[in-house]
Length: 78
Image (cartoon, rainbow, N blue to C red; front, side, top):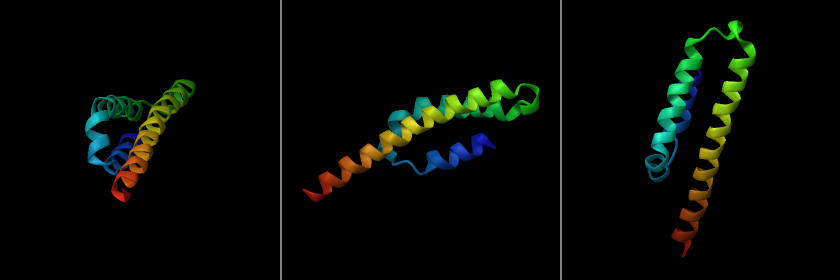
């Protein structure tokens, strides 16, 4: 479930950003797959901590994407 959501989110990235952060994306997808395969009820604290850690990295990638969009728009307007 987490992996699918991340794949959808990463699919919307611009090719420029996606190519540059692909190693990070691959690691995050692997971590999400591991998280999806575990039983959440077995270790709720670990699950929540790992999910928050993954989402923290996703927010960083989203920030990079947003900054790229701003820079790209400025270049197109000049």
